[in-house]
Length: 197
Image 1 (cartoon, one colour):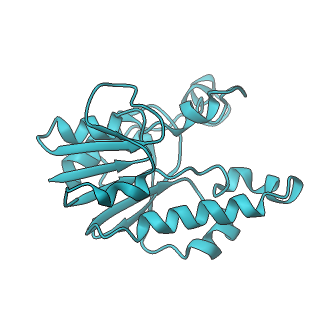
Image 2 (cartoon, helix red, strand yellow):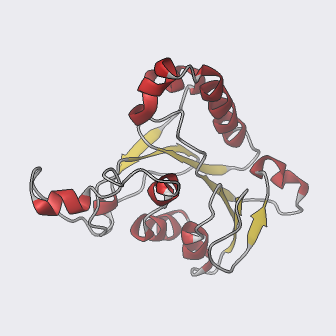
C-alpha cells in the first residue's frame, strides 16, 4: 500500500507501516526527526506527487480544536484561528484517498459544529500496551475501529502511578510542549499498521 502520514514529524506512524512492507511517507512543514520517506511541505499539495495513496493517517494541529483550549477562544479572541484550523481539518478529510483516519483529541462544541465529523473512535494508549493516559480521537473513513492489542489496567486516580501515566497532560509549559504532547505512541502506531495495513 501507499500510505501517507500527514502532519507527522516524528516518523513513528510512518515507520510502523514501513516495517510491515508498505511504501509509507510522512509529510510535515518540519523535517523528519528520523531518516525515512518524508515530504517536507504543506500536505495539501501532496496530490502533485504521482503516488496514488491508498491510506492516509492525518494529525492536523489541535491547538484551536481541542476541548482543553476552548477557554482561550473567548479570552484571547482566537475565533479566526479556530476557523482556519477547522478548514484545514476538512481539507484533509476531503482529499481523494479511499481510506482515512484523522486524529485529534476530544474537540469542543465550536469545532464540532464547524467540522461536522463522521464516524469517530476514542482510543487510549493503555489499550495498546503503553502506560499512559491520553484520549485520542480518530475520525474513520473507510476503516474499521482499532481493536485493543495489549490492554493494561490504568492506576487509581490520585496515586503516584496515575500521575506518571498522566505525564502528557502534566507536561510543564515550554517551547516544545506542543511537540511532545503531539507524538503518537508506538503501541497505537503498531496497531494502526497491523489492523489497517
